Amino acid sequence: MKKNQKKKNVEVVTKKEKDSSFTVIIIVTLIFFVVGSLIFIDIAKKTKTAKPENTKTSYELEGSAETIEPQLLKMMEQTPATKKFLEGELQKRQGYLKKWIAGAEKIVELTSDQQAKELLEFVKKNSNLYLPNERIFMVLLDETRFKVGNFGILFVDSEDLKRYPEWSNMINAGAVGYYHPYFRAIIIPVNSERSDITMGIILLHETQHAKDAFGQPPKKVLSQAEVTPTEIPVHEFQNKIIRKIGGKEYVKYVNEYAEKMKKDNMRHCFFDEFTQFNPPVPSDPDLFQKIYGYGQKNEMPFALTNLTIDACFTLLDNLYKDEANEHKIAFMNSLYTHNQ
Image (cartoon, rainbow, N blue to C red; front, side):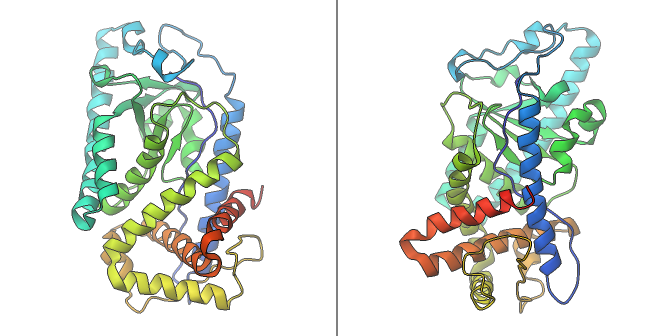
């Protein structure tokens, strides 16, 4: 098991409204993005000093990555019931991982993107599966795959929330996934169905964060100033992937939205209570369906969030050239600080 600490790298969902424009969806989506981050930060603060009550069934992450050993399952009392439970959980989570890996493989197939290919191989080679436990600690499930320095993948489903309600804030915050630098784990809620493309995008995004931190000791404290700059290149990678899948029609739509932002006097893409992100209606009503292939309505907010970030980055690149990165950081910071 391991101590909870500050979260990051959140991508956010809301609900779709079919009005004259997507304004309401975009505003609510971005607010969820902010609320999600703040909840994770609050959880990290509250659980920083929490200690597991039973050292026979849990252990904490201490020291550098080189000192971590796969002690947990050896320390647990392996009764027949416990063994059966853990074997069932491992099988279930291997099933989750297989689906999410398949999504990433589909993206590599569609885009032939070298960065996506390298991330896919990285997550296959360097990840361990974990099981959530009490007080936001985690159990190493597959000890046979353990390797010092590996990062974890933790899927959290509805059954986990029944057993360990402490994890409910992680799910209810609306995050689609994030990398936790203290756990050194990708945490993914699986409380709703997602398309292959959406799962692949989320997994590759968070794997990039895990790869960037690979080989480093766990980080107990990450300030917003430290986290936000790391999100910029990862979102730019994500924008690139979606553009490759969406093709010329999607790139045209992103540029139209960026131009509309400029006309709407949103030159800095700064998000506050007065901001209205109001994308134009796409000329092709099936554009998002063609890109994401989603069958669930709850995926439209994810698509619109990606669109808005790409359009903002495009506008800032066009306006500020070499200084655009600093404005992108300010834009992303505005999402985190709004409503704080």
